[in-house]
Length: 207
Ligand SMILES: C[S@@+](CC[C@H](N)C(=O)[O-])C[C@H]1O[C@@H](n2cnc3c(N)ncnc32)[C@H](O)[C@@H]1O
Image 1 (cartoon, rainbow, N blue to C red):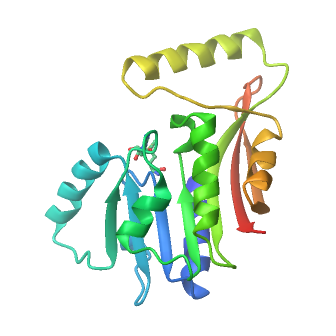
Image 2 (image 1 turned 90 degrees about the vertical axis):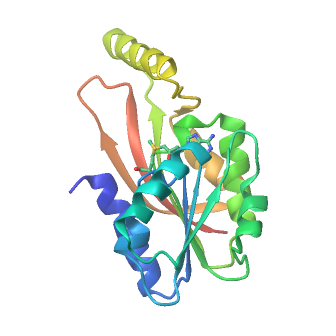
């Protein structure tokens, strides 16, 4: 199984077996964990851009599976604050939550990433947890790897999915610290030799 998928699956399994009753999947896309990890008493909040979420809902509803444990809330994170959207969706900040941000942050600008992390922290009862995937740019990238990265970014921008953020080495950890999160689990995935970024899987708790 893909390392990233296994990392997020572990986080959800650990949370729901340890009594967390709210799992908030931010930028959920076609994430199926609300169906795979459903448990009595656990509410899943799927928060996503309306365009993606509309399509996902049509597909999932077409499967005919029970979805009464899932709350769908749409948001454009570039324009709206997640605190308001979660409050309107019935998320309870007094109860422990697990927040997932998988494959999302690179589509948001650095100030939006910072607000998102702060807003999630503000809705976190003690014992809540955050799991994120992100990338950090390595110093001394080879010219070939840098050109490859620039080409990929241009392609994604052309198909309407511009990458809006990247972080320097160690910078993301500082951002978590500054927004109220302490890293408690870290998995680093290195790409091909000469790759100009390292991929991080991080779990953090409120401090
Ligand atoms: C690459 S997908 C990742 C989906 C899923 N979390 C996964 O790992 O398979 C990126 C997700 O971020 C969401 N997204 C991107 N920009 C967004 C924005 N401005 N507001 C809300 N969601 C956004 C997309 O709708 C999409 O669901």
